Every structure is written in structure tokens, then in C-alpha cells.
Image (tube, rainbow, N blue to C red):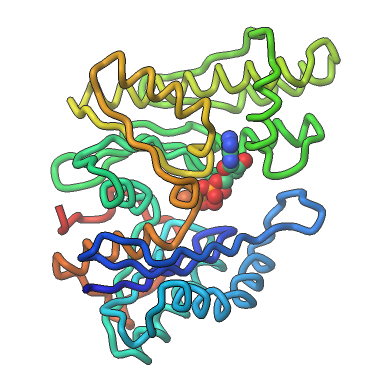
Length: 331
Ligand code: ATP
Ligand code: FE2
């Protein structure tokens, strides 16, 4: 059994997971998400970091207990090294370094975006998928090509989750907006014409956001119709760029990642697109879509097996690490 402890702390979530690399099993996946009291969703980096400090010990004990293992049984400690919010990354990195030194086990620094793809390869039989990564801050289409994970398309302005949360706030729905929009959209009856902005492999959401604020103010449209139309329009944009990346790279597998991937309508649209082009789409449980430490442990395991080690003195956090900065030794 090769056991990895994974630690995630790029943004609002502090997570600890234990993964068995040989049995290909996630033994535990503890997720502690920072929430603002008013449910407003504003994130002050130092406050989120304080939250992570408060919960880190509890998260670690819970993860070990749920997995039924002792920390000393771990073969490695993997942590999210970047990209993310510096204050938050620093907490996870600190915990990981301490564990690695105390246990005398190697440390492996992991790229968070790549981990969203690797968890899909580990938990499903997808081998070389295109990843549609749709989270709060990130909207990217990522795939492996010529030795690296590359970004084939991305948002030119805001991430789709942040866009959805902003729209929900404008409707007075609170944070996080995604699940509320999804349930209201089911009652929508009319498709309202909205700006559709795909530019090559990229999408842009800023103009749509402004357009929606004007529409909400006018009072002419029902919440349900607006939510329905937003989902249909924005998800069509995402599915279009994902499909273009599949066509361009010749890959016939699609996986999803990020909190927005929890949306059933987005999943359905991906399924239809893949069926139409004879490709396969793989879905995971929601706990592996939102930010989580299981994906960090899994990627750390793959890297560890390929010989990757991160020396403590070289384990600095990388808040703005790009997906294609990482040389991929494990594929
Ligand atoms: P990043 O991973 O880029 O740092 P993040 O930490 O904000 O961003 P996640 O935890 O992956 O992202 O996802 C949070 C986002 O997912 C929120 O914007 C939330 O509204 C959205 N979301 C959650 N559930 C749904 C849903 N059912 N439909 C649409 N969006 C959803
Ligand atoms: Fe993420």
C-alpha cells in the first residue's frame, strides 16, 4: 500500500485527504470550507487564512480517523503549491512541511489545476481526457500535449463561478449562487436572448454580466426565465470551447472539474455533445469537483511514483503558477 496524505488550501477550502495509491482508493476526503457570516461570499485573504489555521488540526485528525490509518503510515505528504491566494497557500504549505519533517516522509508540491484533471484519470477509466475546469475563479480547458498540461482556452475576464455568484447576488439570492440558480432554472419557461461571447478558444463573461444587471433592473423578466437562459447560454459557450479543444487535439474523452461541474444541466449538455461526436464523458461525485485534498494526494502519488520530491527548503508557494509551467514527469 502506498499511502499519501494530501493537503489543499488554495482558496476558501482547507482539505485533508488520505489516498491509497495501489488500491486506487480515496480513504478519506475532509473538506472545511470558509463561509462568511452574512453569506455574502466576499473573501478577505487574511480572514480565510485564519479559518484555515483554526481548522487544520481538526481536518488532519478527521482525515486520519476516517481513513483508519496513523500519520506514520503515510509514504508521502502532498500539498497544493499553487496557483491560489498567497495567505491561504501558506497555511497548507506550513502544515505539509511540518508533517513531512515530523514523519520523515517526502514532500510533493502539486499544481491545483492539474490535480482537477488527475483525479478524473485516477477515479475513472479515462486515460487522456480534455478537462473543462469551471470553478469560481477559474474557467479553462486543459489537456495534455507534448509533455505538458496546456491551457487550450480560458475566460478572458471573470471565472464562470464568480460570474454566476455575481448574477445570483444581483437577483438577491445570496452565496454561493450556483445551486440556487440551478434549481430556479428548472422552473424557467422562456429562453431570453443573451449575449453569447466565444472568441476562438476563449469565452468572455463581463459583457453578459452587465447586460443581465440591466435586465434585472428593468423588472421585465422572471427570475426563473433569467436563470434558465443564463445556464443555457453560458454552458453552451463552455461546451463549445471544450468541443473545439477535443476536435483540435483529437482526444475523445471529456472530464469536468471545479464547483460549477456539480451542475446537472452542464453535465447533461456535455453528455449530449460527447454522444454526438462519439466521445466519452466521465462524471465524478461532487466532493471531487469542488476544491478537495483527495485530488492533491492523487496527483502527489503519481508524481511520487515518477520520482518527484519537493525539498522543504525549495517548497515555496507559487500563487501564480501556470498550468504549463509544470513539467510533467509522470505521464
Ligand atoms: P478555484 O478552484 O478556481 O480556486 P473556487 O474555489 O471558488 O475556485 P470551487 O470550490 O471549485 O471554486 O467552486 C465554487 C463555485 O462553484 C461557486 O462559484 C459556486 O457558485 C459554483 N457552484 C457550486 N455548485 C454549483 C451548481 N450546482 N451550479 C453552478 N455552479 C455551482
Ligand atoms: Fe479548484
